[in-house]
Image (cartoon, rainbow, N blue to C red; front, side):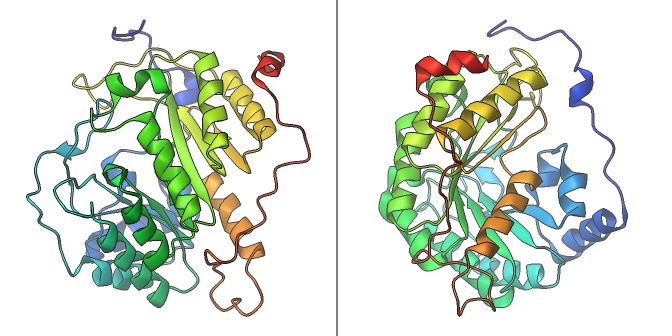
Length: 332
């Protein structure tokens, strides 16, 4: 099916209930009133009701025009011409301080038009949120900063996010076909490794499946991410935004996602969220990390509930041997 449009209807496991509830409605109104853009709505995330009802959300900063054009992403692409909102960091923090959120994900479009890729802007935003929302955990889901590890370090050092996330998106073989030509598997791995070297307490990445990969390629990709000391990984079904984008190759059955989760945990990931509706920002993963980060807070920081790069949480792998590739066949 690779390269062809999948004609089969969406299976039952991809159907979700309409978002609703008092907390969902309240947050939606607050986002509107405070002028915050959420990827949850812009990307029509199927988990929006679940996440918002549990007090997590993904906020997009640095505008809505991306300098890259990946074949899976519906965000507008073009040239923002260096334009940024200098008041955005403090305004975002003030807005979030008025909301009942336990965990927020800050994401961004790629900004190759800015010398530092927006790193200082991101760091300032995270720092402002920490100052005004001391109990709110902040994950940054960021681009690759053109591979400049000094910019990655700026986010870690000056912003001190609780979780640093960067998505490899697809298995290595599909990188050039699905992602923008300026992206690459090697660069993304280097960014994740660089974040850890700069002091990130927790690193996270995500893989889409059902877009042309083989199962063996997914296992190999997971191995490579673990070799890069990534702590948390999410895997979910690719869904085509419109006919302009890469076609869905197949709908991956839940049992295959179960195999990915089991294999990932055996490799030593601290947490694996794998399922048809799982997205890179996913409530189950965020709930796990919230508990892990709260437990790892050192004495004297209980007022913030937030570890800093000098205090790495306990990420000891589960009490099992890491499977080599030859053993993965047992899980299939």
